[in-house]
Amino acid sequence: MAKELRVIGPPGTGKTTTIRQRVERMVNENEYAPEDIVLTSFSRAASNELAGAVKVPPANVSTLHSLARRTMGQKPIAEVGDLAKDWNASGIPSEWAIAGVGGVDLEDGLVLTGNSRYLSDYSLARSRMLPDEHPEWARLARFEEAWLAFKLDTGSEDFTDMLVNATIDAQGGGACAGEPPVIMVDEAQDMSPLSWALVRAWADHPSCEKFYVMGDPAQAIFTFAGADPDQLLVDLPADQQHILGQSYRMPRLIQRRAEDWLSAHSGTISGGRTYEARDAEGVVRHLPATWRAPDLVVNECQRAAAEGRTSLILATCAYMLGPTLQVLRERGLLFENKWRRTNHVWNPISSVSDTSTRTADRVVAFTHGTHPSLWLPMLSAGAFVARGGKKHAVENPEDWEQWLAPQSLQALAAKDTRWLAANVTKNYQRSVEYAGNILQRQGAEVLDAPIMISIGTIHSVKGGEADVVYVFPDVSNAGSEEMETLAGRDAAIRLGYVAMTRAREELVLCEPIGINELGIG
Image 1 (cartoon, rainbow, N blue to C red):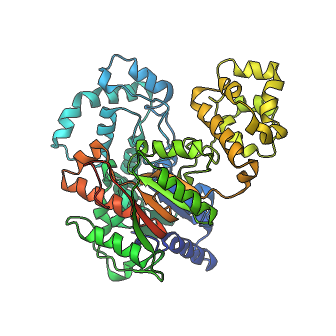
Image 2 (cartoon, rainbow, N blue to C red):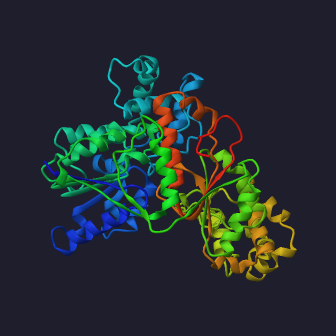
Image 3 (cartoon, rainbow, N blue to C red):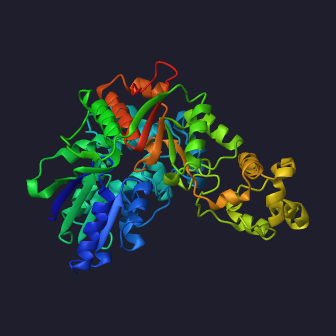
């Protein structure tokens, strides 16, 4: 059995740096080769952060789902694409259907399934490893029978099967892919009981010599997806656990505000952490802005950017950031969510996608812009060009050329974007208008500067930070209902804690709108 080492890393204490240093030491001292070390995490965002910090082969850094799938081989995925459409057309009750059949990200553990309440509940019950006598299984029995038959008939698996099958294999003596002697698990507080069962079974394999677990129970904000942070509180000998004691991010006032908020609520997991704040006072203040009226927030972010300071705007739900996104677009201000780069909504300029660019190739042929970053994220999406747009572009290159040639980038301020918008799909018309606003208000040269404003849900920016953090403290109606339970309250408390601890210099708490508020104001 591998020797387990647990590292508890409160916010900003350098958990990723600690991982990097341990990897470097093992490699530099010839204890292990880089390919002997596998790093895995709950989500793609955390895996990407690790990938940029450690010197191991890229294939050895992945989400837990991806690693499990690599271990067991790849089957078609039942809840996406044509298979999901086949399921929807198989005569099932309408409430079992999967909406958004292309919406599952196989690399992101934050996504349990497609948009199906029954499938989500079924996956969650499996992830939590509910006992056979639990009433949830009786409620889901008819769905389970039909879903299992469908997967058997199609030779497919669902997202949760990746972990279930790998766990069964591991508990029977099977090893993690490549039989690595070192397995490191980051953001462990976000793992479900099923995920814990899998990684501990891998760690029990004779090939595994060292098993590292890193996380912070106080930052467990995915309990709605089955996360079980209690696993990080299991007793270990003193020489097998290490709590990082110095925050390099938070100044004193911000740390005190966050810790007071955490400790004031019974039932919330703190793990008995003790750590020092950064040697600076910091600022905590309130702002009379709401998520429905965010102009004051955007004004401040704009001023901060001019001063060379970064800003991060946070809310509990994506729809609460809609008005802020609209104001940012209208003003032509650059923004991003660098922790969700594959999402074009949050990253209209800086998005990264592996989507086929065959459509784009036909359009980019007419593009010689000095700032292709303005257009290529849009063009790289296969759905950018409207029906008939490709044919028109090929037959009338001058129409596209007038918009995408280098001289047109500078001249766009004086042009009407309606023609261009008419030739792209509705999903991308706002991006075209946004590009025009950037050029009108700031000029193309702004694209060479770093993006200073970040925006996203609290869940999506896990691991992120900024000089100034703005928090809209409302929760959704569904979130409000969850707060009626102890587990729901604890989840909301930890969510507020994670939001506050993103700030390096200044924490700004905005006004809530109604009764469904987090209470951190």
